[in-house]
Figure: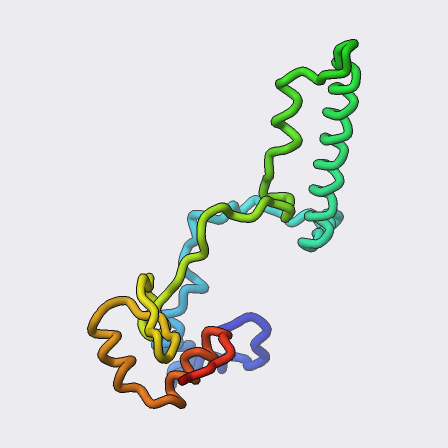
Length: 166
């Protein structure tokens, strides 16, 4: 039975000779995994009650602070290692300019934006000149030609385009 269950098991019914007969476990008790051994758990484990859990916001804040201190330390090292003419050594230049997962400020992609078929979601190299819908191949183009104007508007609206159907 689950933890916290308030239902008490009935005691074994005494037989006619006065001895108690063992209770037959129900199917649910037989199939229950609560009584099965768990070899992956450490039986000697005790939870540390004084340990405080941190939420994600606190952990990320500490990580940002640690990264900020590391950048300041590197900047101080770079200033100490500066040459007399003012040019920093080459090994310090690339470290601060590298984007990482901790920073959202990354340069925009130089690749063109990918276009996907409005009907199938596959990559779409073609666009219907009448409706403006993007399509993957000839069979989808035949389907687009058979669509009504309102259906084409709905597909364009799903993509976030102001539908202007001619």
